[in-house]
Length: 197
Figure: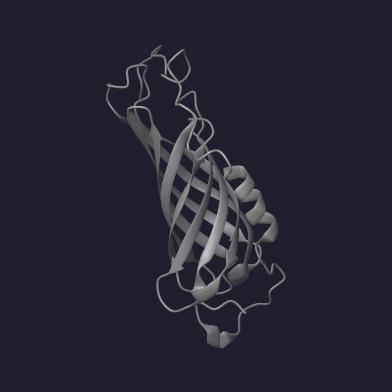
């Protein structure tokens, strides 16, 4: 934990990250995806012979609005129910700042409105952040633990590929900053095609 009275580097007059190269057009792309993605949220339950849906591994890129830095991350989406309506999603992110990289690790439980067919999803869980939380970026790295909330949209594509748009908000009680990242991503099934009818 940071020492008492130590100013966190983003709460004072410390230099901010220059404008992100990824930010221009990102929100337009997210909005376009959200309104044009083919999502069947009224899908029926899977047939018994379909079996359990395959876990999927994916990558995502985006922007952390609170830190003003680019984000690159990865996740594993593990179905907890055969319908695909409940998933366990361990994930990790790297946020790129001037002279510093912050690492986030999260484990979320999410409810997916359309199950295997995708749709809106929301949930939350454990959230951690590893960084330097003092004004001196050369100081010791620390890990803060809190909780996070996530809301997103996922849609199936060819060969079982799943695209996603996601907004993540982490709440870390011991620092003056709550990461808020918006990302777009692509997930690949670990086996089979997990066809979406």
